[in-house]
Image (cartoon, rainbow, N blue to C red; front, side, top):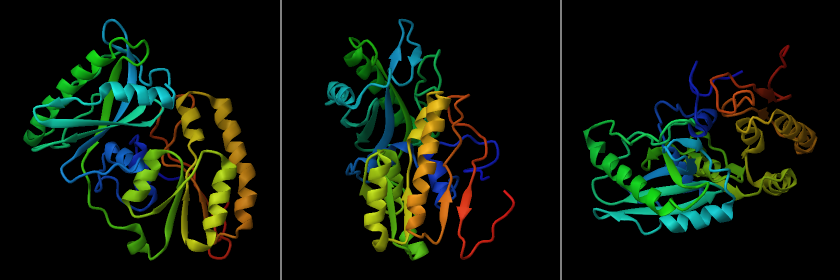
Length: 308
């Protein structure tokens, strides 16, 4: 078992992955917005502040009834992003880009901005979205701008049935991290479909291979690139998504599908194979949790098996 960040801490996927790749997530605090931006190949500038956004459902009292707005499909996400385009407040530009389904990227561009602000996402239903607050004096201007933007966005979405509000989290600016390939002297490649995981891979210097969530596609990509890489990160999204949905059976079936894929991976004769996760997502909680994460390490040439 491993603890992605530390005992009792419920990590986000970004810090969890940084921990897997050897970066101390406490020392390297990377906002989720930065990972989303890199995941969709957005050209971030120095000084930009990026955040991950969700379209959400608000009731008549302004409380969150669904943090994911019924999991709006990607084409609807694009339409909703178009509704929010062009907002500018006090010479600060608010750039909106669709990511996937109900998720979007917000990038603030202008002078004097700081990512030292809190989320507006309360991370639960039955309460109102939070006002952004500054964590320090330098974040005061940005927090005020965020709150004005949220109000403006709500006015543009007020006629929507499901996606009539937005939630923002993971504010960040471009960090300076050691390059994984330089540190390890390995050719590092990522096979991932979801933008956030492509983003964290690019951030630390991996070559990202575009891919889908279909296991056969992942295997074709892995096999095709096998002789040109030394370290491969292969990401599986569905186990996490079904955990968040509280769907135990679907999660179990997907884990079994990955189990059935393992013999094909072993045919490639990897020196080391690790099967693990960036955090626990129990279906019983329908959310990330603080529980330690199982680790399977298979390295027959170099590591002796234990009794687990």
